[in-house]
Length: 235
Image (cartoon, rainbow, N blue to C red; front, side, top):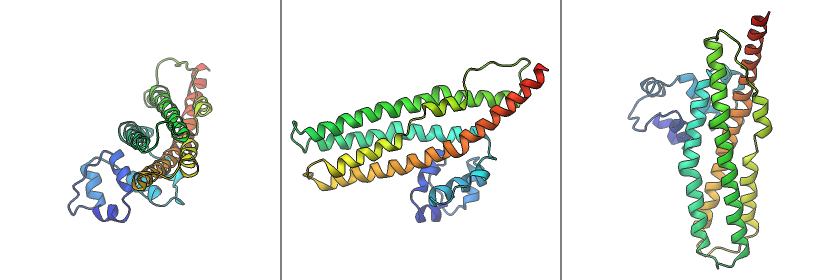
């Protein structure tokens, strides 16, 4: 496992979201997964997709339990809200101190990022409060069918209508930094901010791919199966 991380440090994100602690010693990937009750195949598919952007095992991933994906995505949400976004926000505030208070472009950047944070939090709240509980409820009904049909006015396609593309906002934020701000006083701080935004943007792309290419199609299939069962009950 340690050798794998040495080859691609970005895999630490996958490990963290599967709640695998560091301190691997000489243990193999299989041994680490077994010790932490993580399915080896699930880990390898996520790790390979993260490592190789041209590789996405959609058909393979669709075979894993839906609750595994929800746990993984919730861990990512926690990381974004508690660490990644606050770190970028602090860097932007630090940069503000390097510019004159009346600098119009810096004010635009700060306002843009504040708006981005609001949209980002709203996006996560939608998933945490509405989408994920809905998916888990469908899964529960399929595993333990209720005596009577459970009415619902929600579908995964309704979620897609509300699913904003938050990666595009980060692209716009990078453009503001690259095109419109005057040269920074401390270029290291400025470059570090850009690196972190690029890294978050790539991470969110992987996050969205997992939702759009695996979770959403999987839930559509679950909805269809539940509708079919309910129609048979009605007959």
